[in-house]
Image 1 (cartoon, rainbow, N blue to C red):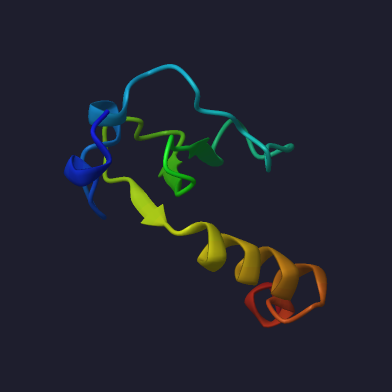
Image 2: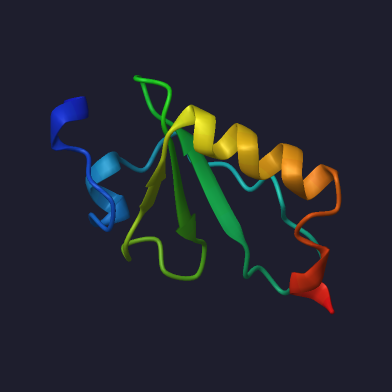
Length: 80
């Protein structure tokens, strides 16, 4: 996949079917977030129940900031 043709909201199937993983899978009946690391270091996220739906594309820095913040409890308000 040409990195210049990757954009936020593109159909996730356009990124291919191989390479998606479910790092946050749990006892939720199969509905979870899937992630794919792109060749340029960005990360794509998609909803597992809609694999052809839109992919959200984040830079490595954005993902690192989010994960560090979540580990530090900064996203706990989402569960309240």
